[in-house]
View: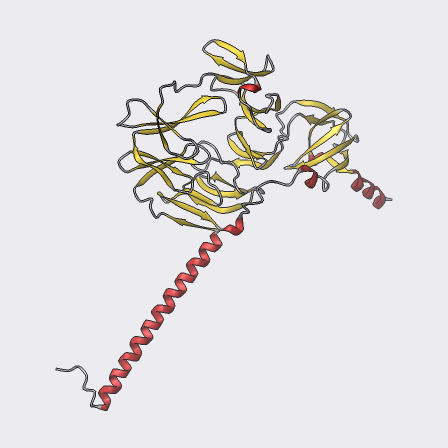
Length: 397
């Protein structure tokens, strides 16, 4: 029995109507699918990133080992190594993989597996397990810290304390974080490559400088300072899932806030919203991240970072807008000249109201000034540029 008899005109009309309706429904479905795809792409662009969990379904945890390697754990509890862009360099076959302090500024990455009698060394650059077995100790040879009585860096082995020389480390030019105690308590400051103290011990924790900024912690919160100790990004962040906030790479850094992780730029602006569980250190806009319990790769849109322009403007380029002569205006009280841009730092001098100071730069509410033969920091709220002062007098006259 035929459903349609095409010899009858009314049957042909009915068949044509059915075909038209089917084509119309199909067209509506195509339009709806296209609109949803375009809308999703637009949403990704607005969010400033994309996130993919492809290839991460069997991974239960990931932690950073150094600035370019991470250790991952699979559903069996076995450990492997991956680069920070998600590329796996060692399959998950080991019982444990850890970064162990060897001496100040030096660590070894060690893998312990069921097939090796001794721990195995890992190449810290490639993330590949070396065939050479590791027999050495897994504790630091020396606990290096700043001895404030001797005013120098020292190393402690057991009960013996001895001076540390710069020749032991051959550091590049720059600043390096050190602690002022061999124990758990203590504060962090920074020394130069010659191991002379450059920034006083005012931080609860501190990290290396990268792209002219370093992460430091005060009052339980993390921020970023420049090499003068001036806070460039306020102390208002938490770690984005680990123990510390991350260094800047390509102008971006993952940070935490209110229990969530996001990414900021060097101006402190939010580039990726705080809607991730964890974001690890990354490079070239690619990060390992966790969202809603699932691990994956977070890729930041290229227009939000510049891989080639990774340094801040020099002080000479940023200073002219704020540099110059200023008058102290404190309604009669002296203004404290401090050793660091912090109200808890040492007072170097008390500047009388009405005095003139020379300002190098102003940042985050603090001005770096020279008063007579002393240099330090004052609150920018209590100084007025002399040009502005002259203008005020003219207007009053």
